[in-house]
Image 1: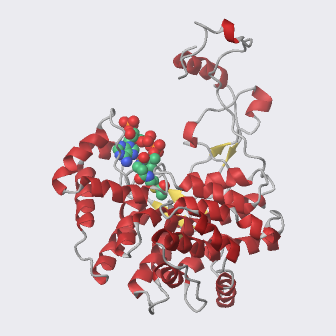
Image 2 (image 1 turned 180 degrees about the vertical axis):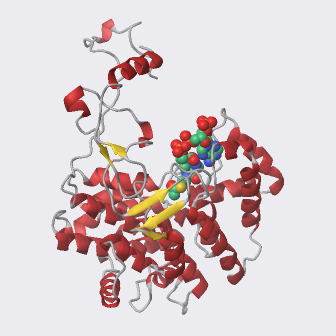
Image 3 (image 1 turned 30 degrees about the vertical axis):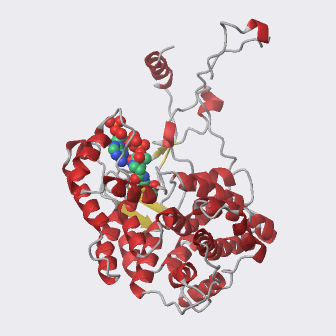
Length: 439
Ligand code: ACO
C-alpha cells in the first residue's frame, strides 16, 4: 500500500472520532489519545515527536514562536541577569525560589558532595589519553550506582534528594578529572570555599605547582552559561532520561542515558560542531560556499548552531550569550577572536538568506557558547561536557517529576510496521535467488 493510500484510508477512519481535550496553563491544548488503541485499534504516527506531548510537566515552558523560555514561570532573561546557577537549580528542583536559609542549606549540601570515591578517580587511568571526554563522562557517571547504592530507590523522597545533590555536586569533579586525564595533568580536588563555577575552573586549570585564582569574568560567564543550559523541557536528552527512568532503572543509569543522547551533534554536541565548522570555513570569503552547501539537499552539511525544533524565532538564550560573548572576550584579552568575526558574518549572511528566513532558522544557544568556552581556555572536546554539567539539573528535575507522577507508566512507543509479512524459515540451500544482498 502506498503512503498516500494509507493516509487516505486513515483519514476516512479517524474523522468521526472525538477525543477529550486537555488544556495546560500555557501553550497548545492536547488531544488525549490514551484510549485510541484500546477503544479504536489505532496508533498515532509522529516521527520525532513533533506534535506529541509525552507527559504533563510543571518545570519549563517554551514558546518557540515568540522566543520565550520560562523556568518555573520565571523568564530566562531575569534569571540570567539576577540569579545564579545553583539558585536556578533549586528553583528547577523544588519549584520555588529559595528563602535565604533554604539556599544556604542547599549550597552546603552541594559543597559537601563534590568529592568522588577514590576508586572512581582511578577509572580515568584506564582510558587512553585521547579518549573523548564525553566517553569518559558516560563511563564514570554510569558507574556511580556501583559506588552510591544508598540513593537508588526511585520512590523514596529523601533518596531522590540525596541523588540530586550528588549528581549536581559530582558532575564538575568528574568533568574536570576527564579533562585533566586528557592533558596528562594530576587531578585537582574540589575546594569547599569556592562557589560552583569558580570551583570548576579551579579543578580544570589549577596545578599543584602554582596558585590559581579564576578570573571573575570567566566565573560569571560560566555561571551564566549554566543558567541558560540548565533545562529546556522535553528536549531529546531529557526525554531520554525520562524514557530510561520509566523502566524503574536506577537514576544514575537514567542520567547516563541522557548524557549519551546529549553527545549527538543535532543536540548538545552542536557547540563542538560549531567550532569545528567555523574552523573549517576559516575565512569570511568562504562563507557563501558553505551557506550554499547548507542549502543543497544533496549535501549533508548543515549550518551547525542554526535551527531548532521548537524555536522558530531567535533562541532567547542565544541573544543573552551573544552579548556576554563581547564582555568575556574583552575582559580575557581575546578582543579579536577571528572565529567570533566569522560567526557574526555567518549569522548576518544566513539571516538575510531566503532559505533560512523561509524555514525560520535562527542561531540557537550553541552558536555562541563555544566561542565563550574557547575564550575561557576550555578545549573544544570539553564543550558538550560543560553542557552536560548544566543540563544534569534539568535531567534530575524531570526524573523526579516523572517518578513522583501518579500517571507515570513505562514509556513504550508503538510503530508503523513496514517489514515483510510472516514467512517460513529457508534452509541455506533454498535461499539462492530468494534472499541475500545484505553485504
Ligand atoms: N542548516 C541548514 N538547513 C537546516 C538546518 C541547518 N542547521 N536546520 C534545519 N534545516 C532545514 C532542513 O533541511 C529542513 O529543510 P526542508 O524543509 O527543505 O527539508 C528544514 O530546515 C527543517 O529542518 P528539520 O531538520 O526538519 O528540523 P528539526 O526540527 O527536525 O531539526 C535541528 C532541528 C536538529 C536542531 C536542526 O535545525 C539542525 O540539525 N541544526 C543544526 C544542529 C544544531 O545546531 N543543533 C543544536 C540544537 S539546540 C540544542 O539541542 C541545544
